[in-house]
Length: 256
Ligand SMILES: NC(=O)c1ccc[n+]([C@@H]2O[C@H](COP(=O)([O-])OP(=O)(O)OC[C@H]3O[C@@H](n4cnc5c(N)ncnc54)[C@H](O)[C@@H]3O)[C@@H](O)[C@H]2O)c1
Image 1 (tube, rainbow, N blue to C red):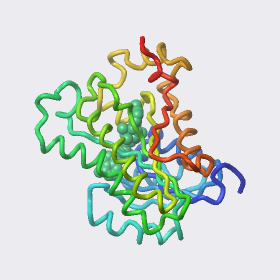
Image 2 (image 1 turned 135 degrees about the vertical axis):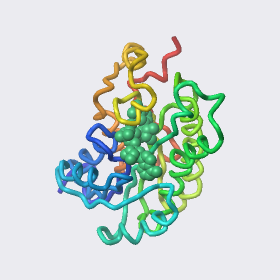
Image 3 (image 1 turned 120 degrees about the vertical axis):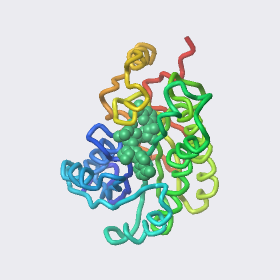
């Protein structure tokens, strides 16, 4: 098959609905010739049903990124379906309610710790778990929300994303010698289940984003973010690692 990802095998985390960024990436990746394996968290039957809606039904393996046992056996379980991995999509984040929506000063450490475990440390944990299968030239892509500034309601998830940005740079430093690239895509706001957890668009946030971004922004279309992820997962950015690529309509470049 031809396409940007022809001959490449990807592990895609983070599918929980058709609106998941990961679902758009999995679909586009297959359209571009990739072989895909999905991971499922919590709702394996639902993820299996979503898998059947992709152009080719991919295998699905269970993965809670905070579960050491599942991480320890991940490579073995993936190897039942593939003989090597050329790309990994980390599209995972979660924080207890106390960590979001304005409760920054009150969120207790156990909740903050859970948010950082799932949303930050998990990038390192996932890459380490996949490492035995990663081939030279492999590309890891994570989903970021610009952590250089504060955002309404984002609170401890903003801190988690700042940590994710640093984690990706250290992974790039440590795995570069193995020919493995790690990059993040800083996406603009998209209407997904995770976004609903931080209040969706009640505040006019998306509308303001689309007015500010030089290219405009459509929060109901994950397609542009998916294309950016697929480009990074391909071998067309071979000298790029530890980078944050913004797929936000150019919003981050605007001062006022
Ligand atoms: N939606 C946005 O506006 C936006 C913007 C920028 C970045 N992002 C990031 O994109 C990524 C994907 O989010 P989304 O918006 O597609 O929402 P989503 O709700 O569709 O995806 C979040 C995923 O995280 C998974 N997850 C949660 N806890 C997990 C665990 N312990 N183990 C494994 N998986 C777990 C969920 O199952 C779900 O599939 C997240 O990192 C999010 O922060 C989202």
